[in-house]
Image 1 (tube, rainbow, N blue to C red):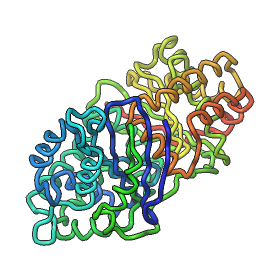
Image 2: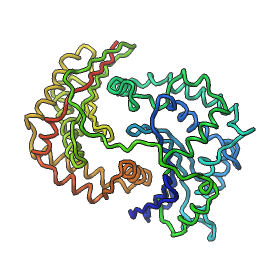
Image 3: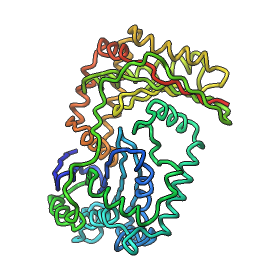
Length: 423
């Protein structure tokens, strides 16, 4: 995987990932902007609207038809919350030019132009978004927001984050809020879109067996030419110096559930970038693998949980412990989870635990370039956090972690919020 980045204009970058592993090219355009309560719902609707049509492809049917004609290309889009940013993501996957039945076609150029048109030149009627599309997408977003309670595990995690980050950007639900949909129309959404596209951070990724003409294609693209330079309106995720909580924030919520959902939100108080690797090892031993303390002690031995795991959110320096439990086992399960956290502080884990954690993490890192989208995701994470760590360097940093390093992390972990969803 040969990675290169080029500044197209201030605030707009081209990222190329040259690899001969695939018969396809994957192109992605990411629009990154600050998460704010005022704009979070607008961004969700804009993301949905852009896939509805562009200047020369005025409907989803027309986009699908164009994709079919491009040898069955696939178009997709999504919305992410990354640190204190909201990221609108657009993808187009096509056959690499080397595998086309007819030589001389420039599918890479065509694909780039189509995706850039969808993102940067949307379908407009009377200088605004089409009202029919706006109302349909507002309704879709409303259903998505109202339906978030259907997935109780995801809902519980979102609620724990919301409680930990009350009135802070990371606490906002990425699809926004129903009450914000009411005043939206084609005119004010298009005005907002124009502001967004001229202030957000824009990253164009191209992954595949590439030629050297991509820079020229991008620089010559009229939609890119029309963009203004900007100081991007986004937050660099460098979250350090979290305060260890003096008191746990306990939140209990009742709903019709057959299984309790117990989430613990932990703060990790570190002050250096390299300590993130130590934290990855800590998390793996605590609950990030099948050999972890959570899995072995809370689930397998004590039989207090159907699910018992933990995950590390590096952009915010939080670890989330996630358990699905019998509702009556709340006190016992919580006590045993806390015991695992305390045992980590005391160094009650082995060198073998560390080695198993390293093997698991390194195995995952080595698969990054096995899929084009994971390669793009890794490079985007590096770009967003202004890091420059290759996969080999990443593995080397994991290998260097010692037991003393992990104990140091353990002693700088504290429970911020306990969220319990019960009947």
